[in-house]
Image (cartoon, helix red, strand yellow):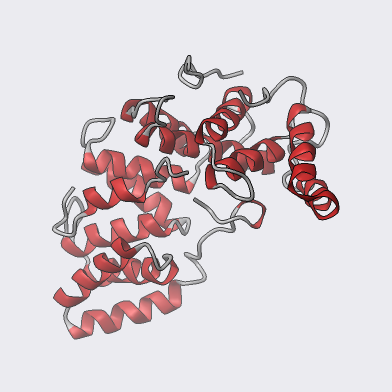
Length: 286
């Protein structure tokens, strides 16, 4: 079983479009001792979201306290979906007070206990996302708990990207190579990981890769395909993700009319192929 040394603390570009600043802003900020997760995993515990339904039913019957109790009992028994849902709830402040330290410990418990979960299984989706969440926490730190540590963030993203093939991890890994954050700048590796994530529907990667492609930065210029990726990303981004809209606006102002027309046609034909993946348990991907 793989173990990671850095999970449990004692008290963890320019492009002319402003991408470096955008990356710092898009990671979850802090404005976002847990039960141990591990031991013997019961048969079927890695099956996905089925056990979360019992917590939902408990909430319907007895409120959030009953739901938390149900999830905690499942997590103690080794249910990775329940442990992940608890981490997500505390990270997002979803029906509970936001507690980043508690969220971090749930995610780190998952990663430390199930790092070798077989890729491609339902349980692996939760484990991969736990690594991504840990990477985000290492990027920004948690006040009075862990300091920002880009090197450890890189390790979390790299593992989830390479072992699990997680598109969110691949996006973050690409950004770190692009910006030289936690690892030496490497344009070739940046493009490799951004393209891999974009092809899986990761819209932030589509935005950054599209901008690189449109400008011909770190990759051979292809204005039409660059605009296509930017259109797909713009159409998927949440309203508050203005950095993606800004990338598209900057490129579209520089593009010729025929390039815009060709890109729009290409994007229309490609939407189903490059659609974003469904979130875990119908939850949004973060």
